[in-house]
Image (cartoon, rainbow, N blue to C red):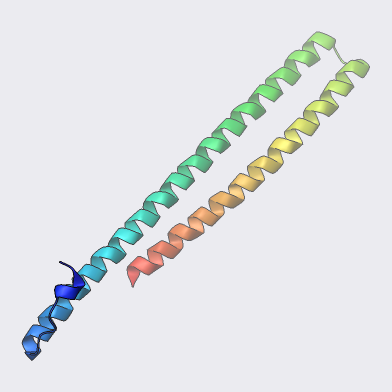
Length: 120
């Protein structure tokens, strides 16, 4: 119903009823907003978890590759060069994980904030 067609009631009981209807509509919009925020936060958390899982798989692959090269080369200068490169790659991955964990912390803070807002 368009707002222009609403007549302001003059009877005090009608005013209370009308205010209640407005409050219910407002609460419905607020509820929808919270539900949307919760869904978006959940999706963001799931995406970060997926990214962390992929990085963990990459780290596992690098470690397996290092072990395979070490066995094939048996040590020496070549092994040292490969190990240094692998260390650099693992360091990069560690920084990536730290960044994603930080994002996950912000998501969790957002969930806590939503929970506090819902408590009001």
